[in-house]
Length: 82
Image: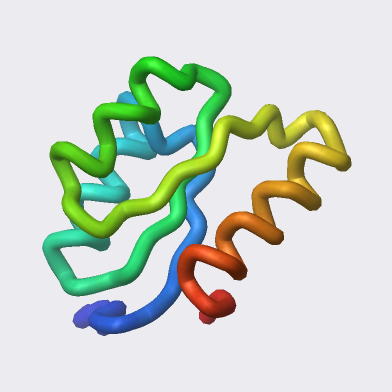
């Protein structure tokens, strides 16, 4: 199965480490535009250095207001989502 994500605008939650970071690596390598969130700011701050063009937000997805801010940030950064 071939997944085409080139140019797609995608949010990845829990993206600063582990599986989330691996997903970002795969999507970034396939040409996606990514906005990532995580609760760990220090780890999140490394993403744009390691994956140029990735934008980020600190967000606890258990907090509805933080999720609203996440989507507003992603919309501003990426110009929408796919």
